[in-house]
Length: 126
Image (tube, rainbow, N blue to C red; front, side):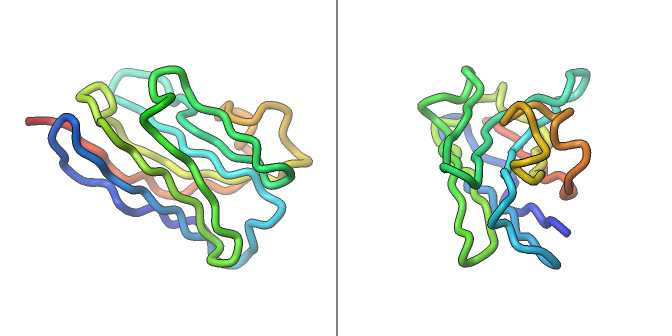
């Protein structure tokens, strides 16, 4: 199971930290991805990190503002979001998939065979 937390209401320019806690399995061999879906839009990959070499992917719209990390000892993944913008408003999901079972690091379809947590709502508004 995956449990995402940390969403909420924040003003433009503010920060939030999302966490994704895994239970019932260890994340050691799993890529961790953060995806988001805004109303009327498709789900998109925001930031993802592999388990094998720690390589990361960031969507262009969040590069330089968001940082993904993982703590295998705590069995968690995190997404630090800074300089938030209204267009970052969305439901954010964390997902995992075994690195050996995915082709792309951060495409939602590649995580279809893995685990998805319930979303957490991030609202950026003044």
